[in-house]
Length: 424
Ligand code: PLP
Image (tube, rainbow, N blue to C red; front, top):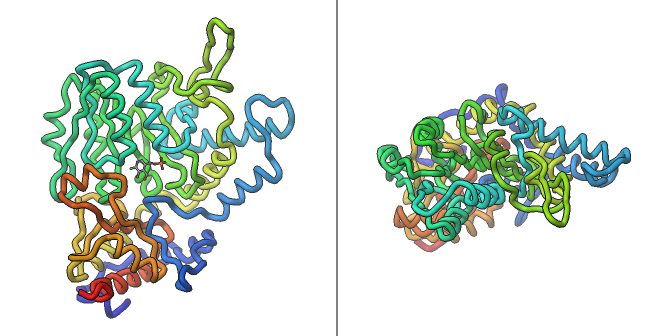
């Protein structure tokens, strides 16, 4: 441990190697042995996107090299193989999140598209003037703007759950804001900016008492903890493949079967129809109803490899290891003079936002970058959250399953020198 990471009391010890062999895990990610600015890469921008294990890249390239064909429509060998592989991943997603049926899984481009699909289709069927849509102040822009647009179109009202200063949602305010007018509650499971884990199971129970449809944004939770949609009882959930060690451009929308079936199509075209006549078309049931056009087949296969990979490692083991890293990083960073961690919820995932007195977060990011450390600086697509806290921007460290205590030591050492570099 670096001397510069002082002053520190005894840091909590990270998970023993016997429980989590991080070095073995790191070998699966070739990018982690590359260098930037001639320094070993330290990747702490996992909330933006995660790195990809070799098995994911292999699944994508094997498809293009040896299995490329369009799915669902072909009568030839390759098409049938590709269709089988594609539909197998739907079953994998079902198992991974504990859905009742694979038909409850819709492939979309990402969490953003999942939320837009829901705003468009729920908007057409369930929301009218005078209704309310409830979100929280810590939502990602992709779980704010689609609802704003829907409110403009329908005359519904966007209502926002506030947050306590420690980064926990104000539950008393939530209970007051939840009324028979609340048609939709769209809530993030884990804040991408400050890492708070929201008590979603309880909030869903309360929302259901008002017949409110609940959408969970699990973009930041699903790669870091076990998730069971039946246990949570959310009505819909959106997920992002690229934050799950899978490819970009692929995401998942989960919806309870009867609800998905009750929604109208989102995009239309080939593959989602059962018949087309010039007068009128009829549509497949979910999930095909929502998958117009040729999907991102390679992306789905890469996602399947990522889910296999995570399942082999075990989501509970991943959560335990990342929690130990978070505790260690929090303690180490807390010991750095002038550094302030924003968001200290009692339940947190591995995301730490912070500021350093008199230093712009972008300067923090640049100084770390030159040491080979990738973090994020800015508003992290949660501008209303920062406005509510009177903060313009933060630096953000987000942890993944391949990060190590040694990397955190190196981060702390570099952060300790930031004010000096800035001449303060
Ligand atoms: N929701 C949250 C909480 C996020 O952190 C993000 C991305 O950062 C998104 C939604 C958007 O995800 P995607 O990139 O899959 O559209």
